[in-house]
Amino acid sequence: MAKIDNRAYYDEFSNWYERDRHGGYHALIDDLQTDLVMPACNNADVLEVGCGTGLILRRVAPVARSAAGVDLSAGMLQKAVERGLDVVQADVTALPFADASFDTVYSFKVLSHVRDIELALSECARVTRPGGRLFLEFYNRRSLRYVVKRLTRPGAISPERRESDVYTRWYTLDELLGLLPGSLRHLGQAGVRVVTPAAFVHRLPVVRTFARQAEYMARDSRVSHLGGFLVLILQRDG
Figure 1 (cartoon, rainbow, N blue to C red):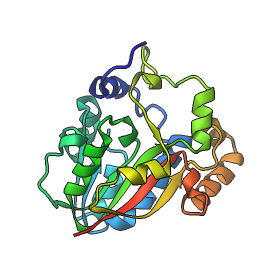
Figure 2: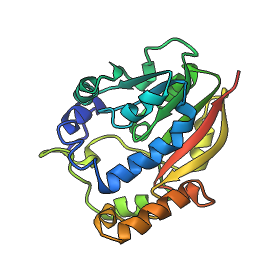
Figure 3: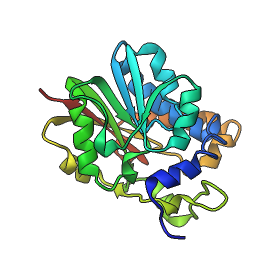
Figure 4: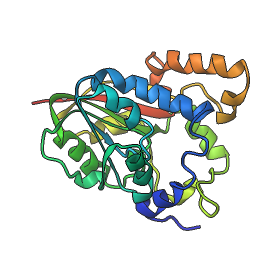
């Protein structure tokens, strides 16, 4: 089946998106990402780029001074609105916010689906205040997750569509660093899903406990650059 545009893909995905996201593997990924950004969100003006249904934004909002979310999909945003979150429909390549509006900007599971990634990065930098932090996640080509994805059938996101029906690009760390605008300084990176071979291991008793501990240990370790989801930790210079 041919690829479709991102808005249509995520509108269709929105009907299934939360079916398996409240436990097991998907909940662990959300926990790892949320815990990573939470210290930078405390009493800060925060923006989540690609907030989806608001599963992470709802956890960040109580500790932030202000918390806004933006997403391309009206279907995804409907649930975020029902959760009482401050969200707006827009494209990451044209963020509807003034320059230097936020102390912290983060984005998970989104930017590897954006074709004009350099413009998206420039927009994320533009709305961040000087000295502010950005946590921007990409799919990592040098990871176990990439190998598994290459060897297995793409997962379903609706009765008719699969994950392969949307534009997706996998990056290396060096490639990402070469894409950064001059206003962003690379502070480091974190790796999400470094050791998990397949999502089902997080449904197995005992195994899932050790797998969870291993992922937390690996996220900020020397092997973080092998994470299936590679999070660049950046600072906006003045």
